[in-house]
Every structure is written in structure tokens, then in C-alpha cells.
Amino acid sequence: MEAAGIEVPIVWRGRRARAFLPTALADRDLTLDTRTVAHAARAQAAVEHGAEAMPEDFAALARLLLRAEGVASSFIEGVTAPVVDIVLAEADESGSPSAAAWVAANLAAVSEAIAEAHAGPLTVHSLCGWHRTLMTGSPTPAQHVGVLRSEQGWIGGTSPLDAHLVTPPPDEVPALVDDLIAYVNRDDVDPVSQAAIAHAQFEIIHPFADGNGRVGRVLVAWILVRRLSLVTPPPVSTRIAADVGGYGSGLVLFRMGDHNAWVRWFAEAVSGAGRAQQELVASVERLQREWRERLGGPRAESRRVRSDAAAWRVLDLLPRHLVLTGPIVASELAVPLKSANAALGELVDAGILVEHGTVQPSGRGRPSRLYTSAELLGLTGSNPLRA
Image (tube, rainbow, N blue to C red; front, side):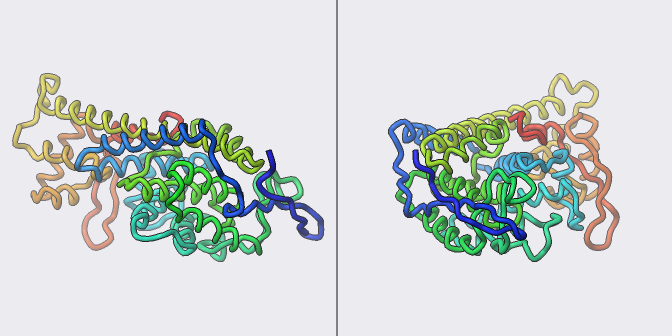
């Protein structure tokens, strides 16, 4: 097994070190063995079955899947926050910096990439745009946001002198990124293997000053959505988060030249994500039946809600709106604000919604109370290891 690159000398603050310069994908033999081809095919089938399980009104579930992906991708990098805080951060227009806001930015970057996936080929501009969105509210200096790095990078350790991996010298980055983009835009490679190889090469290049792991996983979502004509990607990061050790080992094997072992590991993660997508659809449907039982079934007892009450119609807004307010309900259902607030109160009494304080509207007006469903948010969770 021959390493897929060479070490090159660099100078770091007056001291000599060595950086890893990967072989361009165009120059590397990436032929897959029979076993790996089978793994990739099974993974693709799992993703396609997961997509077929999505209901016609897929927008709500797509949002939940994207949240699972964004939360897990941040979790892998050690950025965590309670899922309710993340959802509220998405609704917060103030842009206040926090861990939750940073995770919400990860979700925004994934959403941006998916919106672009069917618009045209990948470009450097696309990658830099995702990075800019991802780093919103981060402590990364502004001059390093949305641009390829101009300084030496490394992974692990405190400097290139003790790092786990010293990434390519900055003057090599533009050509390596161009080679990566050319590979990503090919359509003669199966989608799962393409996503695996592109992600691994991206992580070796480490083209940005920070946020490379998350942008690299956004790239996976972009490839799978584009190549498989999906409306939303499977939550692959949830499977990676469940085996971070295997993920890291697989990337090392790729760098050492064993791309087949890496693709097989990655394909298993994609297969698990496809199954998780099917399970989420079933869980949401089950939860919606339980909610209706609480409102009007035998278990509702004295809390039974009239069949013509607005509360029933509010259920239809979940999970499309993960955060509800009186004005949102009033607008969506075309009912008076008083009726909307009363409906939300009935759902709180039934244990379906939880109140989370107030938010000040961007314009004039009184602050609105915020409501979420803890059970619905719990299906994605703030800890991806539950996935």
C-alpha cells in the first residue's frame, strides 16, 4: 500500500518541519474492489429507500433531518448546545454569539449547500460561501472567513512540530482545491464513493483556517443531494458522530493509500443514515397520532379539545414550524391573535408544547411567547450518539 502523497519540507517560525502533500485525485488510481463496490451500492439503495419513505409534504421532515445533520456535524468538532437553544437561535435575528448560534450556522450552511446542489457545478466560490455562512458568530478572525487559507495549517498538537498531520503548504492549496472540484463535478463515479473520496481529500487539504471538518461534511451533503436527486441529504454526520474513532482511522487509511477501506467505512455510515431517515419518518407519524389522541381521544379526559378548535389545526403546523408564536399561528391559520394564543395554551395543557419565554419582534409590537415541542425536537436530539 503506497501512501497517497509525499512529505515536503516547510519552515515554521524559524524551525524545520514537514507537511503532507496529497497526490491529486486526477493522478491517483481510485479503482474500487468488488467488496467496496457492493458496500457503496447498498449504501446508495438505503439512501434511496429513505428518500422514498418521505411523505409528499416533505418540507417539515426535511428540516428535522437537516437539524440532525447540523447538530451532529458540530458535535464531532466539540461544539454542542441543547437542541431547544439551537432551534431558538435559528429564530433569533439578533445574531448574538453563542454555541447554539454556531450550531445554527452549521444548519444554515447545509441548507445553503442543498439549495445550490441542483443549480450548477461546484465552484471555489461555493465552498467559500458555505464557509462564510458556517463561521457566522465564530471567534475566527474576519480575514480568514470565506477565503482559502494563506497560512500553514495542521491537525492535532500545538504547531507543525508536534501535529498529528501537517496539512499542505498554503501555496499548494488553490491547485489542490481545483483538482478536488474537478473530481466532485464528475458524473462517472458512483455517488457514495465520490462523496467518501472527496470528503477525505478535502480534510487532508484543509483549505480553510478553521471549520474544515464541518465544511467537508457539508460537501458530502451537496454531493449526495446532487447525484441522487434528493430533496434532503441523509444525516450522515449522526453516524460519524457515533464512531468518531472509526472515522479518524478511515481518513488515515485513505491518506496511507487504502481508499477501499475508507470508502467501505463511509458507505456503512451512509447506509445507517438512510435507515435513520426511514426511522425518523415513522417516529414523526407515530408522534402525530399520539398528539391527536391526547387532544381528543379517551386519554384526553377533561382536557378534551373541541373538534372545531384551532388547536387541532396548530398540530398541522408541526413539525413544519419547530418554533411557534401567537403571530405565526394567527398568520398561518388566518385566525385572531387571541384565538392563536388560546390554541397554543391548550397544547401546553395537553403536554404537546412547552413555553420558552418571549422574543422581541424586529419591528414594533409586543414580545411574543415562544413554544416548541420537546418530543419533536427529541427525535433529533442535541446528542447525536442517540441516533
